Amino acid sequence: MLDDLEYDDSEPPAIGVVPTGTTWEDIQDHVKIAHHPLVVLPEGSTAYAGVYWTGTAMAVIEDLGSDHDQAISEFRELLRDRGEA
Image (cartoon, rainbow, N blue to C red; front, side, top):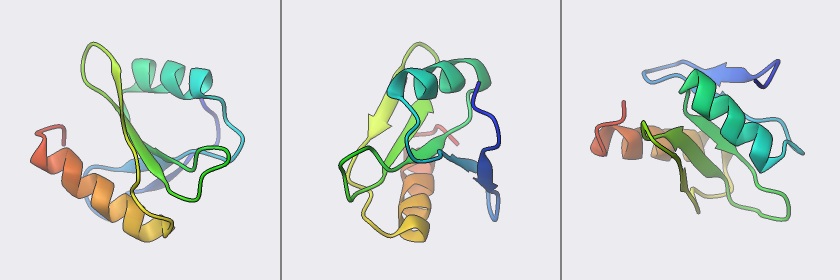
């Protein structure tokens, strides 16, 4: 489980913000256990990605943009559209 995550809970669903440098393995472990959607800036990338648990596997939505707030907003909308929120 990831400790000290910050959450954007300005509207549902709450989305955790993954600290820089967190490994994909740690992200998957957290999502698999907690089932909270997360936003991460992958190492070497300028675009955020959203991560969520589908019930059987971790799903990654890439290219949410380089603006932190916009990435969270776009990810939240995508989750709603897919019925994951």
